[in-house]
Length: 72
Image (tube, rainbow, N blue to C red; front, side):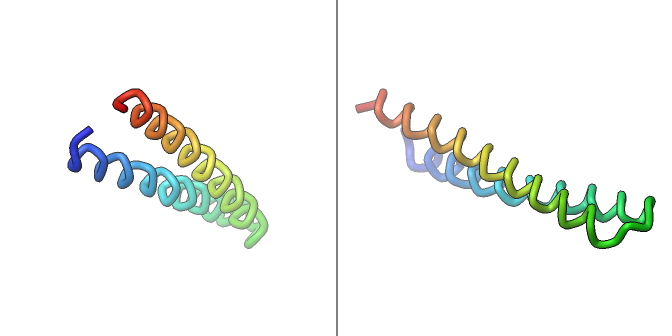
């Protein structure tokens, strides 16, 4: 695996973590505004996004490790 490919793999892992948190928080924020329940849904969806981000990061890291083992 080339260095550029490794770099993009690591960037993808980080992007999945951050994007899960941002999307979850945004959904919670807009639902809070719609239902006037601030800050409960924002917090709930923040933690759901955090969980989803870590789950995606874990899957990507596992896939990266497997590809590295196959290349050896």
